[in-house]
Structure formats: C-alpha cells, structure tokens
Image (cartoon, one colour):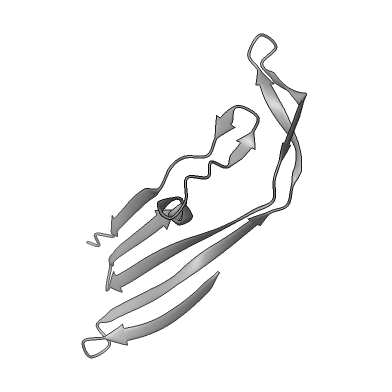
Amino acid sequence: RVAAMGQLFDQALDFQVGFEGLFFSGYDAKRFFPALGNFILSDRRVESTFRAEPFLAVKIQTFEAVLRFENFGYIFTDRIDYQFDGFPLADFQCRLMLRWQLND
C-alpha cells in the first residue's frame, strides 16, 4: 500500500489518497466440486497477475468516508483473471464506505 496523507481546511479534514498493489504468482488452480462441497485439483494453471486498486479516504471529526476502486485494471483490458478454475474475479467495482460515530 502506497499513500499520501494530508490535511485541508485549517486541519479540519484529514485525507489519504493512494493505491494498494496485489501480486499473485502463478499456481495450479483448484475447482469447486459442489457434490462433495470441496475443492479438487484441475488441469488449469492460473497465470501470475498484478492488480492496483486506488482509494481515497477522508475524515472530518467523527465522520469517515472511503472510496475504493477494485479491479481497476479491468477498465483498460478485456482480460479475465481467475482465483479458482471456473470462478472469475469480479469486474471493476467502486465501493463507498461511510461511518459516522455518534457520541452522547
């Protein structure tokens, strides 16, 4: 994870912007076998892959918001990555997390 942190508006707003890098080395994929409820070996090999997921986080007193862009590289390519044989990773997703701690 690489990020830059800072403050704005007379230090009332804290922010963090950056990206998280994920590298998966190649491996022999497993396949889910529903009849047994277990994974079995398959003849498929999953290639090595790198993913970068940018994010922005802000905090104002007790309010926090995080915006993440998962599988961001799928915007630029038609490649489909697999974690298990027959189960592709999700497409590009944008996630927003809001948290507001209310105090008495």
